Length: 245
Image 1 (spheres, rainbow, N blue to C red):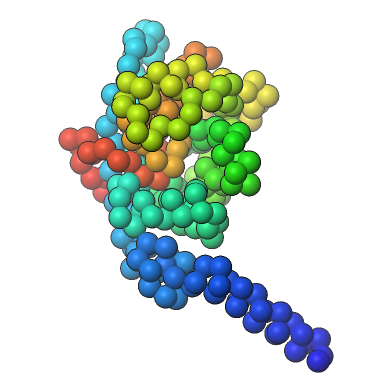
Image 2: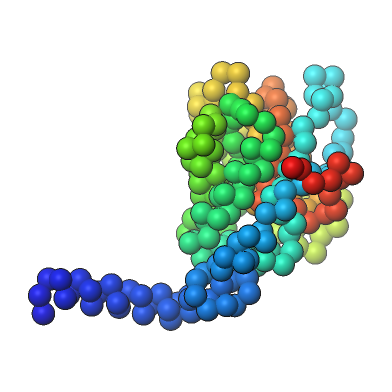
């Protein structure tokens, strides 16, 4: 077998392995052909403002709040299945589409320049998944924004100093209590912020807003202002402002 034949054989073998591993089926609807079919991909983007209810009393210089919260989709249907496949089942080929969704949310918040601050991962999650999935999505999103002319960079400005545990099954007050004082600003990352740029806190899914709001409060405590929050998807009913065109 010549070099060309060997290369083709290896490519065919890789395709066969991919077929066995991913079944070449859409993670959202099961249609055979690709990991995410074109119909499901089109259905993902439903950009809207997301309502969260902050708790606690901000200091006078924080009265403007954390800015709007924008999500690219509702956390149900295809969007939910795609996020779970990426985060819990390691289908990393979905990083691109999730990054594109996050980029749309960030772009809806303004023209920048932006420092995009991901929610820091839990250590056990990184060990289990082998990757910081949200960090990868944020990197992809800011890369797409830069390619489109925005000034945007992902900056891991926050770190975990405690683990509040998983939120599944917890009420909103329980979630708030669990995340309180669990984050800190990584002083080593301050130098990566662009002078005059705004901070955008990002997450994959926003539900009650407990995690993103705690991130905002942590940044506030260090004297850093936040212009808005962006996420791939949100679970609650959109605010009265409705869809964003």
